Length: 159
Image (tube, rainbow, N blue to C red; front, top):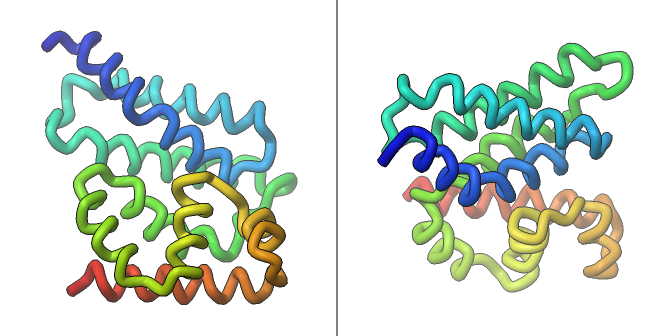
């Protein structure tokens, strides 16, 4: 497979996930689109130097670092959210293709409300505020349940 064909396949598969991840962290839609383009530009520049079987890990690392760089350079306009570090680690694991089957099994072990919250957050790309409204809960309760669900998933996946 040529580099171009491989890159096109990677772009089709990962662009929606990368874009969703960035849009969840960057409030400005134009900046988010620019960052998504930047991620794939960097990926294209390093396509020859990366192991193709682990390219998704490389891509998620580039995405996370690009978002961090954005917050560092735009700090007067967009402070880094306190929850970003916690969400990034779990969010990255949720997005990795290699963990999807284990994740599906772990999700089944969660209580229904926590499972629904995780699905809405990471698969439907809803914000915690949107989820709170959808589930008729306060934002604080939703935030606590989100953290509890992530902690439970982390514990299940660590076993």
